[in-house]
Length: 274
Image (cartoon, rainbow, N blue to C red; front, side, top):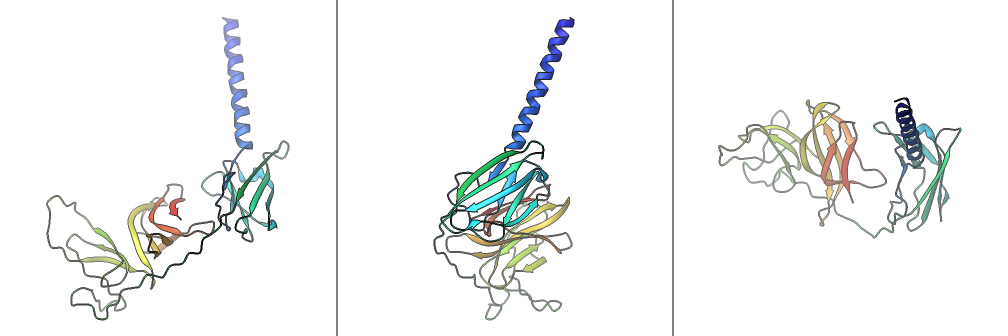
């Protein structure tokens, strides 16, 4: 029995040692983004080190094949392990960028490196969406309010009721027709509960009820939409009192697309971008 116990103890120690070695190897090999071999990174990309404490990342070197060595600032993440190097100037289209750093405690650091290529951008432009006007609108197609004469949301008319319709408010985002572009909430009868016009030339999309910092929040996208159906804009976050509490912008020189935004319990957000 003593021998059996010793073997079990030895096996446990080996298991712990293997686990420690695996953890050390994982800590010394963070995911570097853009991923190695990427051929279409943005000229304004940041360099992200994922899965390792920010204080264990040092001696970072970022060198472009045409632009040379890049200076920048280093920012740790708030909701996950890792940090990003933010270059102070953009890379050149088509150049190859090499990244290296020392990872781990000062006594036993490990050298890591990666490289990627910067995209060649095709010329691309889009016209701002035209905002609707209350001038010349047929009667009863827009709403007017003495208490707020500057807004003119479109009229919502309920023409039929279904017993299968769930009770509660209805969310809309209008982007054509009469009335202003914006985010709107009505009750089941079509009466206005809340309306937020977007800036002139912008469109609102994807109005949702989500959770932000543990509380209910209204989230929607606003910006411009191209003929291809691609959006270039930002995601807005408003609290239950209809006050703006946050704005989600795409990083790396991109713009948020209109199709989806999901806020995580940790306070970060998943968005789509082109």
